[in-house]
Length: 440
Length: 99
Image (cartoon, rainbow over all chains, first blue to last red; front, side, top):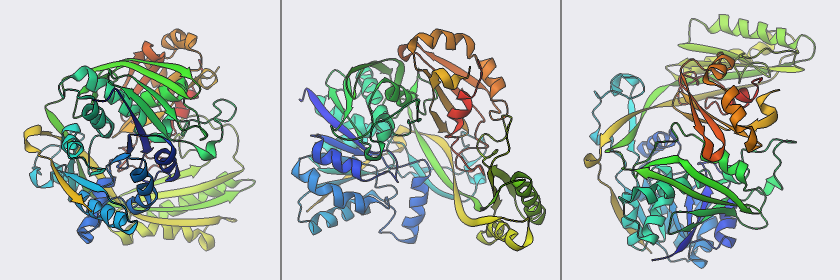
């Protein structure tokens, strides 16, 4: 059993930057690199791609990331765990193997499956958010359980170099190698809680190294253009030191660590994962050097009896249009334009929203606006059941060029299919996970 | 003074709930924030944005407060028509509060 391992966080969302993970793999002296790339809705959208083409349905950046990372991972013996499998971990594993062959690299790839529980859900079951039966939300597209370390551990035991999963709870991606390397018991909830805290700190990658943190004059971060991503030196006792590769931009300090510790936490006494209910209120953070924060404490209690399942459904089509007005009276011109579009569309949309970007689009008019902005961007958004109807929003905004107030410019229009998410709980016994080995 | 002058914040989202941390630059300001930035005060300040209940968690271990705001995201990330559907910028709304 190891006494200490180094785990890097190389992606915080599907579209995250590619280079910082390469720096980690190349120069980070890592044991493990984790790429967390699945947001709530990502998997439902991936499921749609898989329906259209059964060889797809994994993360769209998988190929680009793997081409860059594989040579360093193999050379430096870094094991990779990623949820880039999205709706199709098996196809993703095949693709990783193909890329390895092209690069003349030999790797052992394992796909972890079992999170897809679409066949097991009961459409009559009530959604947690709405209290209404799932089927009433709309056409159901996907159902994925947030599975945990127990699904990943067999893959680690198999000696896999690259582990590709679908939906796994984010901190579990980080906790699994700790449990594997330190021989932690899967019912030692104190250690699992501590490890989950460390995973939570790393899972958004740059969000603990100064990304999403900077505020000029208040919270400065050096060399932000070359922001480095984090790693943790984890001890077998469940404490860790968070840092980043020397020479990269960004900062790891008490402020960045606190912001990330509290990020997306709805109850710091009980942070639910499939592995443990972790306690964040006993976590201690301490700066112990430049860009080094020590994490200790934290704990946990017995894991929940159920898995959370995210169910994706076809919600509606979103149509959007934008156009700008500038100079004297620009706000009044934008407001007139908004009224005109609203009148032209109001009977044809399920829902319509008019924002004045620069004035009330973010705070929704909650606070008094003192001065007239130098320029205003009208934004109109509408819900419709078909793409054609949703497209009317952008068409009407664009048509303001010749049918609206003077001086409008920079019109843009967008139409997007919107997938909604609701949740249910599923008994653990109904969810079985599998590992599939692919070797070159 | 505004909260912005003495504290920083990051917003997170879960469904239609927005989580807002409040972290003083100086840990010695933590007791004062506990006293002044009450659920009642935040509810009043955010009344144009947060339509549901607000729960405040005190975290003396990191000298920080956490506000969990229900019905804050116009039905939630996945189905809202808002420009900032995640309410990512709502951290800045909290910091606008005068104390």
